[in-house]
Length: 344
Image (cartoon, rainbow, N blue to C red; front, side):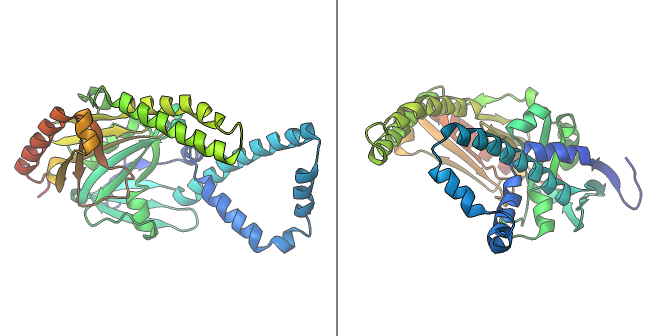
């Protein structure tokens, strides 16, 4: 790392890593929406070169199912590839030349290919840190980091600097560098997710969620039968194993841990989110018990900070065993009331 007037360089993201992040993301949908808008804006000019009406008419009237399939499957594959390529374009345009530096207690970000964006985040104002890993990123051993700061906004309409400094604080980095960057965000934090004393939610949660899955499949079957008789109900039968599988995976994905200075929560099936907040940053702690929770002897533990939104993950731990949730509630209230701010 370099030091001096420009600060200590903590992280620099090469273009090849942005390309991998783009391939692993679904951000291409945004650019695809833009291209669709352009198509409808200039459809008359486009139809001078492509007879779109004839293509749709051929698909609707053709009786050659094999020919339609042979064209449709490659078209779907091409669209999926286009999504990924557009995702790569979005990442490169947005984060080209990304640099994260530290000057004193300020973290500074610069990035952007055409529009250069610069943002500064004071470390003492960081309330909440969230590590995101979607399915493709986990395969590639990548992660991204989002943060929430005091006075931060969760609105999508916020300016580019605020968006980069929170929602896209670190858009992508190798999994091996996550502990290093976490230690920079929170001095003294020894980040090792494997070493946390993770607590699972209630062992009966998968039964409760599976029953909800059965109810969901029943509703799908009724809706399918009403829309397409007489075989529409088979949609519910087909959906049942999928919904039950997702329910079980959801119950297993929820993990909670508490250390001497922070609370950590992990959840997510396809996109795993691991978030941490610190006792002196906690604003409210809430214990919720709905009538259904009481019937199942469960409770929800909710922890909020001064900012909420940009990290796209809140510490709302549902389906905890009731007694355990009440003990943790009391302990978190005690520890947060005793903690003093780390920064002066």
